[in-house]
Length: 469
Image (cartoon, rainbow, N blue to C red; front, side, top):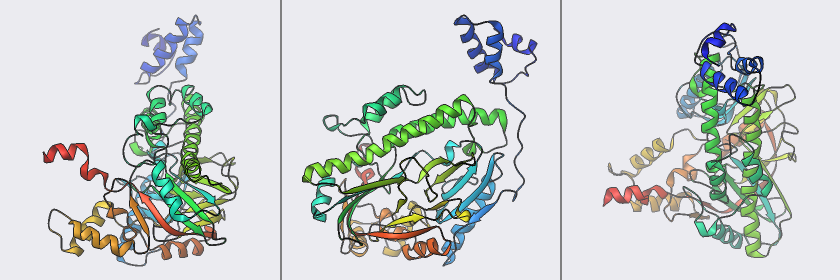
């Protein structure tokens, strides 16, 4: 079949001809009729081009207030980027959480943003798909022993585990990878290599005691690592092809995959597989710590805060750093979710309130007013550091001040001061705004004992060593 055949059948010529012809000729190679081949090609025909929505026509709920000039500037930027995003043709509503902060160029969903849409937008769950929290309760276990145990079995930093320490997800999850076009191939190998790892940045393993019972708890924070990043890349590529056909004016970061298309259904299925992988990734580490201590786990639950949820209204709710707070948000939802603040503050155990002004979400943490780079620059100015940045003495002083009373550890051995409590918004303010806007009810807390993070692993990264050499 050629392009002329499609034109003769009344189809408008365009970039979509190439994949349409590929599909049509595959039908013919498989012994199908010309009519069947034309029908396969017609599935790629774009609908009418959708214009951007009028500015201000989509409801935007701002569940955030400023307490100083820095926060006012942050909120203005968050609101401006959400107003641009909300012009995307398929978006129906949006909301902002108290921990919101910008996360890219204008029109990019901010951290702490929620978007309800008719379609699936890979850019609105970001590359760290299913970034999530998990908690296990270890009754009768010493907090330091548990922190030592998780330190000995987890893995932070780039890449996967060393070859001789690799783990495998369940056979069902591996089979699901192999049967999904978005996840098969190289992604499967990464899904094994990265299993049992926590990444870097703000991800952590946190040990504390339950305020209600005094029992020891382990809380972990990480996403889907390499497999999720690969799925995001493939999803963005597919979404951008649809964008070029359906709405060229839409910003590339807000491109969407129509939910009722074959690509949309397959991508939705891939998201659920990645969700399962990530849940297993949390609890394999918890189970390894329990085995190390010969300890028993009395209770556990988890929740994601970078994901897409489908509600009964048929819309897809994208939470970028936002915790689900509506009933039955997932088949394994137990009614409670987890909101961390910073390593020196309690982790909050909350019950969602399904607030309409939050589109059924609550915050995912304390958020930032400044980027990591800007925060480091501010610290350097406060310390009187020179152009080379913070000295080891500066870092030691900051560590002593901000982690006093905590067993704060960094997996690579070098502290990352951009992840210390001072880098984040006021925990008290975020907690007050959760109550003020009716986003969730705090029902318990994990009082901090200690925390492990990746640390500044880039300081001695191989490429930096070569440059110094």
